[in-house]
Image (cartoon, rainbow, N blue to C red; front, side):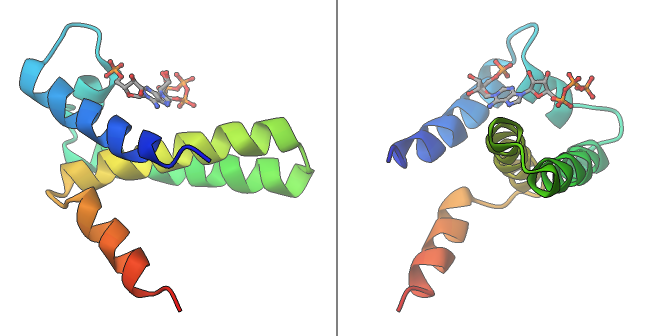
Length: 96
Ligand SMILES: N=c1c2ncn([C@@H]3O[C@H](COP(=O)(O)OP(=O)(O)OP(=O)(O)O)[C@@H](O)[C@H]3O)c2ncn1[C@@H]1O[C@H](COP(=O)(O)O)[C@@H](O)[C@H]1O
């Protein structure tokens, strides 16, 4: 399982906010006029889509929607000024 991809995507999100390249989805969400609400709105949408996919029993859609949800949670974390590393450490502390 490639767990490094989470850290890599987080780094890309931070890099996009430094470089602000044209056409970047990350930049479009994180600089939206609605501010953090845009990222939170996307988390809400993707949560609903994930629930529907899981309830419908579609394996492919469930995987895709879970990826969308995880990604948008990362964007919302960044919009909140939180560090993904702290979340991963919290998860790590809960292991028993
Ligand atoms: N993982 C993702 C990722 N997952 C989903 N998305 C985008 O999220 C958007 C929203 O998905 P929706 O399901 O809501 O689809 P939609 O029909 O386009 O809906 P709306 O955006 O119009 O509301 C889509 O445009 C997808 O392209 C992503 N965009 C970027 N990434 C990662 O972020 C990195 C930086 O992306 P850029 O900022 O675009 O360079 C990429 O290299 C990827 O690693």
